[in-house]
Image (cartoon, rainbow, N blue to C red):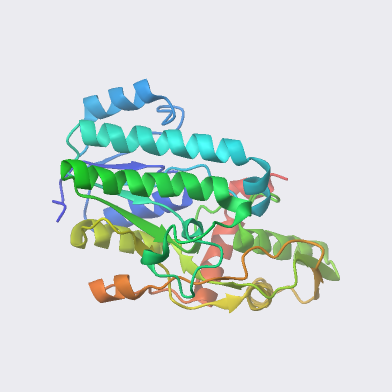
Length: 314
């Protein structure tokens, strides 16, 4: 268990996941938190990361920093996604090890699993067949981080763990018109369509893919729970174990936002993976379950969007 006054470093504290972890830690009474903005510490600079760890010597590390994006960003910037994520995570994990960090938790993504993995996807299906091409670069980087944690445990007896979240949404999400994930993109699109009085909104694909969504504060709660209750080489899936079609998600988002127009589908655009549902029986067996239902979560996310200064960017 982490002591309440333990020195905890949250990497990526300004992002959606990192900021949620900071909120959760504070809520649970952890007050000795270390954070650094990208300007203060570039995690891709090995010398800077080593100096930071030598100076601060955090006892616990939540590694939530990453270069992320949706289908468009992932498929256009393959080399960038691989390089930045690989370098960043290796620097942080290695420096944590070198400086005697008691425990590190690495955050990945469910895109690490094979494109045609069994559904729901158990942790054990990792590396059993080929990856989805659209986010292969990001997946390979995340698999490397996860494996590096496992190999440090095996070689040096460290206690480094990893957690693989499903699609996330919530406060501090990215609402960029082309570089955001599906749910924030829908929130923005329906909000703007409502404001502009548009008769219809066009969405990508045919609406048939099945997806699972986890509210980011629920993930943060699991992250702290795992840091205190789990050790092991295998990753832990973070999700709800529930899924819905993109079409259902789109209709639910329109309902929450109050958009009354028509929803059209552009079937010339890609659908992405047909189905991505995590097997969450491992987290459940450890004694954890999610709390926020999707409609409530979308409402909370929409409130955040309305207060989000980033949404003015086009």
